[in-house]
Image 1 (tube, rainbow over the protein chains, first blue to last red):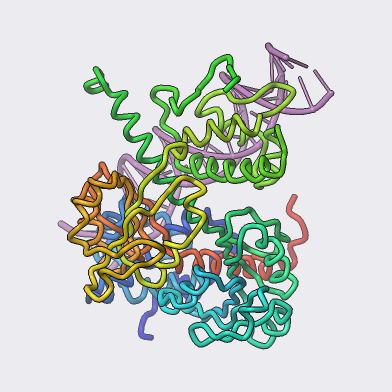
Image 2 (tube, rainbow over the protein chains, first blue to last red):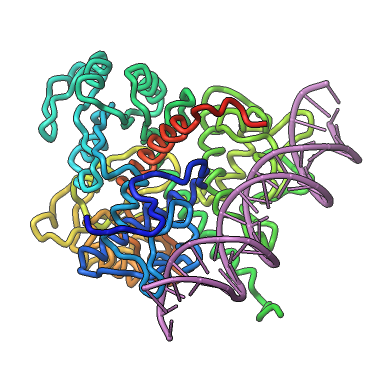
Amino acid sequence: MADIRPQPAQSGELPSDATVPKVVVSRLSLYLRELQRLQAAGQETISSGQLGTLLGFSDAQVRKDLGFFGQFGYPGVGYRCEELIRAMRDILGTNQSWNVAMVGVGNLGQALLGYRGFGRQNFTIVAAFDADPAKVGQTVQGLTIQPVEDLPETVRDKQVRLGMIVVPAQRAQEAADRLVAAGVEGIVNFAPVTLTLPPHVQNVGVDLAIELEQLSFAVTSKLLRAAEANGTIAGP
Amino acid sequence: MADIRPQPAQSGELPSDATVPKVVVSRLSLYLRELQRLQAAGQETISSGQLGTLLGFSDAQVRKDLGFFGQFGYPGVGYRCEELIRAMRDILGTNQSWNVAMVGVGNLGQALLGYRGFGRQNFTIVAAFDADPAKVGQTVQGLTIQPVEDLPETVRDKQVRLGMIVVPAQRAQEAADRLVAAGVEGIVNFAPVTLTLPPHVQNVGVDLAIELEQLSFAVTSKLLRAAEANGTIAGP
DNA sequence: CGGTGTGAAAGTTTTCACAGCG
DNA sequence: CGCTGTGAAAACTTTCACACCG
């Protein structure tokens, strides 16, 4: 509340046109996570070099990434954690709170309902839906499971802006269509399928098996590369 | 069993040096997922254009990506689903089965133990560990929860190669250290922290709150861009 | 034909390197 | 001095366009 910056890029106001690469935004989330940890540990300022080292990036990359959104640093000092956290949350949109509707309350859905990590970034799951009549009416983590037919009304009444799909693959597109029809602006999809969505609806896919697959590739190819490095001692 | 290709890149043998961009590998997983769906639906062949359209990529990108690993297509025809699936699984490492150890059997861990999606790609969670003595000895999804001290022995005896961290943030690094000491080659980390690992251990992080954050950025910046497009009708 | 594989061109992202600031 | 912000160069990724194939 006491900070005035020279050329401030204060509250989420991107420099007009700014087409920011996706990969930059994903690093932003990592910076923010690390900054919050540092702040909790009592650190007041941090340099691009330190922050980069903690995450495995170069100092220049940290500065360039932040440079997409404004000027946040102090030459000779670095960045003030509190200030940068506020700025990053403005940029990422997590200074405002987001209401989320979950569709599909199976094993994974129930675990996600209980996950504390969402709340810390201002996401609240305010409603849960399931197509199975046997589940409707049950209470999980304080939420009463509703029939999917209730989606439009609940999205409107509870100001839901995001949807979370946690149904089996073959039901995911239908769930997405219902969420879109109900008016959500973005969807996180935990089902292992690619959704077809209108362009005004944003989406992020999380496929747990694919994450393991990426790991098995990394492990396998690491071993291959090591095996190949026979006889080659060091290229000039 | 009956296929011979001209310049085959058959079983996971990358063209010797091949340093494949990470983003290519992540698309590979999407190709594979889509191919498996198509095959299950009875489709025998597919062209780069069709596959790309289903996933939102260009035909050229699909071909270039596959080109990193060998030649799999038939001019005038496209790719044979079955053959390409086998090749991709060889490349990604999922034709062999992978034993996984889970550390942290809370809400999310239990849900992941029950998740069917892993098995389809040949990943099996063969052991589960928890530091909480109250949990040790309980049976979840057919696995008896073991104390973390058992890790080295179990990893050896059950041929575990991958670890899955599902503990709270402040316990994650310790869990990682134990997995590394026990000899795993790769780690999937569901805790919202960056792990420090020796370079021979691969890792993939999955932060559920970050996925939502990426979505909130996309939604917010979409709205901003739309708001800015006032007066500008179409740039030359 | 319809479609692959692939060099070469275009576009994008990362790294470098340094002026400038408190 | 230590560190940011930023053009310019280097590295990398995507798209283009076309020879070639069945």
